[in-house]
Image 1 (tube, one colour):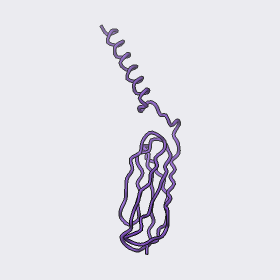
Image 2 (cartoon, helix red, strand yellow):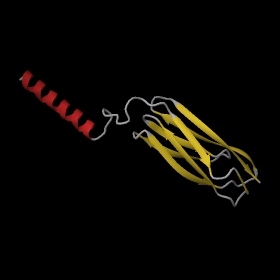
Image 3 (cartoon, helix red, strand yellow):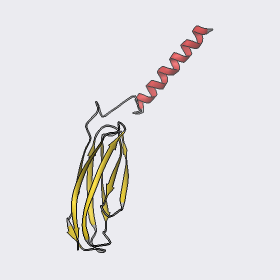
Image 4 (cartoon, rainbow, N blue to C red):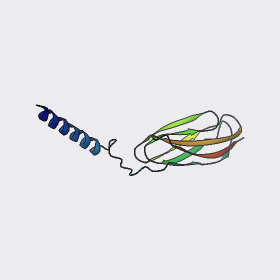
Length: 126
């Protein structure tokens, strides 16, 4: 009886591992070994008018097991983009500044290992 239960348990475990691997689950890291985090932030223009100009921020983050990318615009507003297991997260986010001033926009990427990386760009709004 014990031998029969042991065989059933081993078979169930083998099927579970096989399903996870086939589905790209946590046992199958398709991005290979842990990749160091990196992020690049760009903007279509670095100066503009308050309340009317739309700034288009683009970012590309690379790394293993990216949790999220937080894009802070320097004026108290931010956007969070969820990560994934693809090894790459990218996007474009528009933003309009309500008041004139000098701002520093920051894109920060975090991974499931507790590591982070950031990039910044300076914006001047008249």
